[in-house]
Every structure is written in C-alpha cells, then in structure tokens.
Length: 69
Picture 1 (cartoon, rainbow, N blue to C red):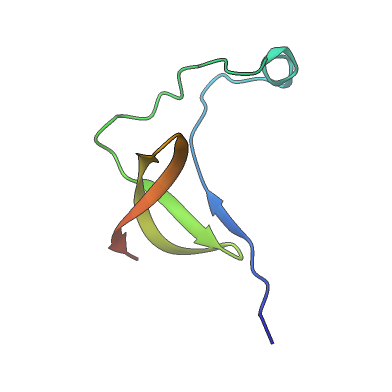
Picture 2 (cartoon, rainbow, N blue to C red):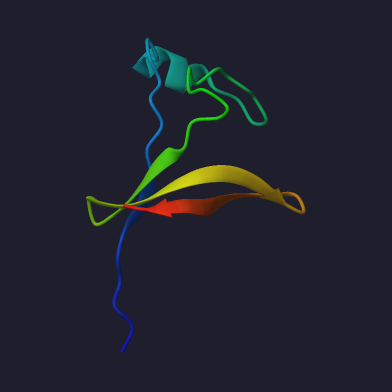
C-alpha cells in the first residue's frame, strides 16, 4: 500500500508580497534572490531530507539531489 507524503522545495523570496503573487501571469519570470550556485532545500513532511538544484528535463523543470541531509 503506497504511503503518501508531501515534498516541498523551499525558495526564499525576499520582499515578495501577496500582491506580487496575485499579479503573476503565466510564463512570468521573477527574481528569487537565490544564488544560482546555491543548493535548494527539499523537505518531506516538513523534515529536511536533501539539498537539490534545479534542472531541465526536456521542457519540464526538475530537481536533482546534490546532498542528503
């Protein structure tokens, strides 16, 4: 029987407001303030599991695990 879990990739968005969120449109790009060479934390059910980096697979955005926490 499969065990359901929630996975999140956490990005810091300094100065990003609810108004900014409401103004987003499809295919819009915005600055996250996250350094390109910095790994992004991946959490499963709220627990830090790994550090990841973004990658493109075809036309899909993916994350690649770079370090297990």
